[in-house]
Length: 216
Image (cartoon, rainbow, N blue to C red):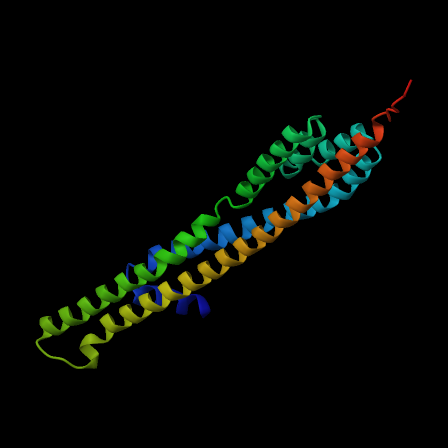
């Protein structure tokens, strides 16, 4: 029953409802894929960070590298780069680049949601115009007015408008939610990277021999 009602609604919406249907499928696919990817990346790095930080604080760089490599996640590559560089300045620059690359990876495909959110209302507006044109065309063909003559065109216009607004609003909502989530994750990751850099610097300073000046 619900399936036949949906099919009838799509039929009443005219040809413009088909691109809106495609846009909705793409939005749902991107939302599911990115939601899973972001959650997995955040969970993996949250698991790896305390282990790497503890090993780095104790000066056991080999153990920290083993933890990173066992994770098998591209989002923890920043730790491997930091642990393999001895110069603090180059280490900090590398960490910044790899954190930025991780955030770019999180944002992959998210632009599709923003694009669909901006484009869908215009597709619906186009369907509205087509429906109004159809209504007036029916009036011209019959030579008379009345609701029965223009009902099909008005129905097409209203369904196209509603479809465009629904797809657009939901896509923009999910897009903004993802951007906020990615921004929060990126901020936490930068803090964790800074913690590791400080821990490595303190461990290195603790290893340096203390030089006592002698006076003769």
